[in-house]
Amino acid sequence: VEEAAIYAQMAADLPDAPDHLTLLATSFHRKVARMRAGHRENASEFAEATPEEIEYLLRLYYETESDDMRNFVRHRLQSAGAEEQILERSVEYRAQFMQIRGDEFSYLSPALFCLVSTNCQ
Image 1 (cartoon, rainbow, N blue to C red):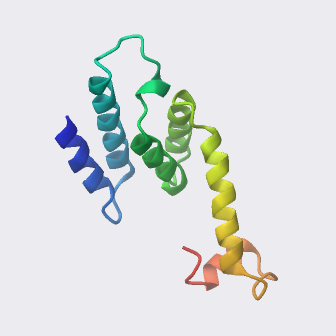
Image 2: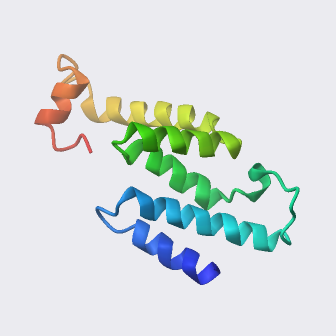
């Protein structure tokens, strides 16, 4: 399972990897965490969630275009006790965006700026 987690993570990190590979990687990370915890049946999901899993879920939350997938990921983050990190990450991304946009293009709406700028990624 540990080896599968490594390969699933590598596949999920490839450019244009589909969303389901990230979910596969997170499920393997969860299984590895369960194994390391000694298969405790009463362990909460928060205790089983690894930092890698939370990071993948956060990445997936922002990268997916599917509302259903985003809701599913939000539920997984909530059950892992990491829902606050969605807001923290949003604030961080907004600050980065505003820094890239700067005062020079402040007259453009964010959507229009993203259309005309290569730095928007």
